[in-house]
Length: 199
Image 1 (cartoon, rainbow, N blue to C red):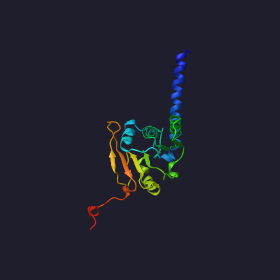
Image 2: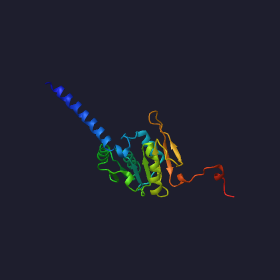
Image 3: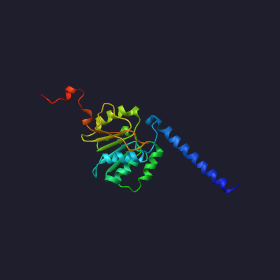
Image 4: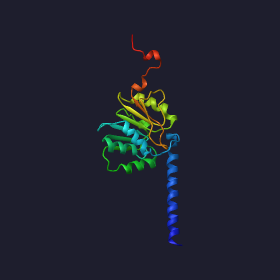
């Protein structure tokens, strides 16, 4: 058999094995993610977030569902922050660990963030399905400290008032990025009367 056929079989077999591994990783975490798939955040979206949400060296950025750790790596490079990411998809977790090897101050954990208290966060970043945003809002309200900023890609937090909505300059990745300040996002005037100054 010619060597090019053997090489072609090896390449095709490897691609099929990778696809099967990726499919298995999605199925294995479906009860937790409810179908949300690992998909790296577009670089333009990460840049837009980091351009508009400055951080101080030593701040703690928590990425819930951190995928391959791209957001954490870029924030660490730009601001020198401490970074903590949670991921349950085994493929994404492995990629995140490999891509952050040797980067001090980045901690990637293979854990379900629903069971972790994130009260120490200065900034929380998430890109989750809308089905879980209501539950997430409740978790954040129970755990966050005053002054914490929350950034949510694509989907708003129900019942919260954003301080800003960012739109990346991209025809493919221009979906909104919602920015919140806690606890101000929870306490906003509902009526014109509420907005008037006290008598």
